[in-house]
Image (cartoon, rainbow, N blue to C red; front, side):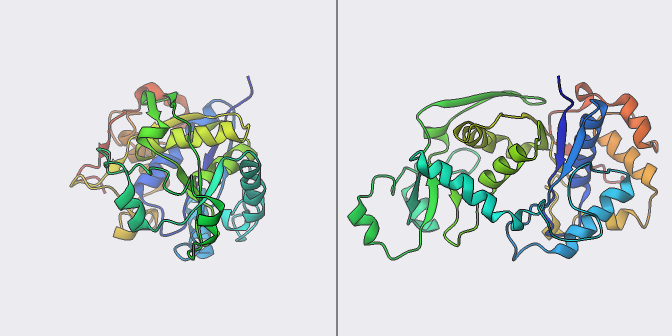
Length: 312
């Protein structure tokens, strides 16, 4: 078997917080323990919300922790082939491949239209698009004045996979998802499409990310198969919550590595993250080499993790 290829995929919309670091550390430990590589990709599709300066700050944080990457952007220079905002031509090629297969169609619905027309909301708040624009005639499409987004048709079937931490997961694309967008009306490609193309082309075989993305994985598996790409292994790790049980978010100024670097050593931070991950019984400072010796997915909990109030 070939060594695993993992990845870091930060969105540079703010400083990396504890939840981001938790994910980066587990992805790195998993790949490196298998003798594999790490790819760093900057997910800056939304250029209004992200910046090159924050991308450079994130790379500096990763290197300060010792979380190096084998393929990706140079840490001292913004831009390049590993920034999603510079990969539109690549996405165009694979969008056209889906178009040639007759799998995509223009959608003229506004967000309000989608909400009003959707099937009943699912328990997690998602809506199911009923395919309003799928059957429009050429005359009906030519009569539209709104610039369309583009959706991919989903089949009436279930996508099943076994997650590395959460176990068996199944979703019926037609009843639990509906046709989903892959390109916005402004021409920007959607997250699910871009990450699928990028992970495939960058040789990623193991995707480690937060559990809140578990329900979107069947959509990406469908895209992998539609584009004739091999499907990687998915490992959805617990979401890290603050002491009050709230999700960490960059927009809420959650504890960032920039803050932690002023108070703790590298080994102290790694020890705290290792404790949260179940890799050790307390937050004793540890080096990456020491954590590689004890890392096992069997030790990592599947349920969300709350940071103790005293922790940072």
